[in-house]
Image (cartoon, rainbow, N blue to C red; front, side):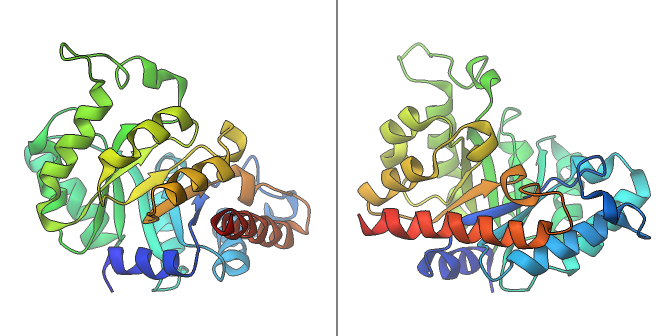
Length: 270
């Protein structure tokens, strides 16, 4: 099953929530810290309690890479826990050039067997092309992100009056010859989302920023419903995995993703 087929299947079930595995030893329930592998035990519990309701999982590589070889092993073991029909995103934000980019693509797709990756495009097409050679994947390219620093570069106005992020989206559409490109667009940027959603065409969209970062799930869904398209993933990390850090954390995570799914379904009915 290709990455797009996995996404389409879940979206057809009105599932759009991507669970972000930003797993931090300092934040997980204290009773897990005495286990042999606390982060793996935490991830296993979160996945087992949410997979029936999730559209995807996003593994934030930075939270694992900091632990070196052990961290890379945790990524590998965590990915094995995720059911085959659910999209797995490597949130690694790669974007180097030449052979370096080729090696990054091989790591994500050949070794870790992920379905998708996040990429920043600011070194141009030769930094992205090695990822695009992997058909059947989704390469989520940063367009307009959810952080305040998006104003520094992404929202710069060019000579023709357009924004830099708009030109990134246009370029991504040009790169989409293998139908394996997507974009990242911050859920906190709701005004820009409403104004630019038609520019996306049929690109899949990964939207971080609901919950702790202040984005509104209802507002995001309304934008896509109004424009008669779905093909989206809306990420929630802290809002799900750290909803409760007591020994009832799995039930709380499950209830939270169910609650989010209900918001999605009810908003689509409006």
